[in-house]
Image 1 (cartoon, each protein chain N blue to C red):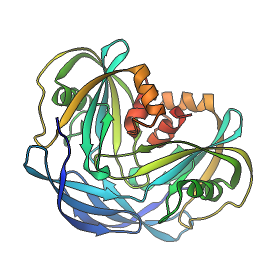
Image 2: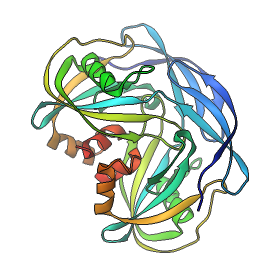
Image 3: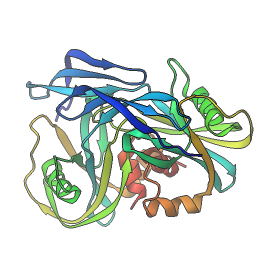
Length: 172
Length: 172
């Protein structure tokens, strides 16, 4: 069955610092029309950073949309026109204070293809050394180290619920 | 370090069929103020449905936000007040035509805690039997069956990029 929807008019309802929201009118495969509510997001990069062979960095951060402090792999948004690899190197240092000698691409995901265009690109960072922590002035982060075996246990117990973190680890 | 952000005023910029968007002013841990752009989403349910011991159902669907047809595990949005388990049973039948005798909770994720409050609840469905396909009139879906080993290979090759699908499989 043909599944493609054809673009008709679009109307922006919001343009923000980070996201935009538009209503996209589409022609459905059966010829009818419908509307899609679409959040435009610049995309992001997330990093599995190994401090030794079986220990990685997780950051603890308050996430206002869910009103919870959660554990995640370090991650950040792509600046306009920024290369995902450069973004990963920058965000890892800003959030954790570490630079990495080796930075290997692991794959990408779409986080919410039903309502946003966000892609997240994953990298594996190894051979870490100290850089300068700091960056976004409205970001507050605690940096932790966990063994991969502990993390697997925490995912099983529901103590780690961040989708990109769980997906990233399965791409290792 | 204290990470909590305190709610100040909020302002809705958009209320839609599926998502709302608000600007939440917050007091940061250091006493400064900032704003967060937040997408409210009702949350969803996704199902790993086993047709035999090592074969599951994937659905192929056009996702307008990314302008691509992608493969995903069957999933759908929670109706207002709907129990996730009931939602999973309903969506599995609507999207694939299958009902399941056994429906086991696997865990939950947040998809995009940086900008939305969406949770996805995962279930494992087994002992499938035929029900009635159909449901949302603006949803067009092709139903497929794949071996878990094929799916792992497709994830590794970047042929499956859906974050919830990749996360769900690692919760099995």
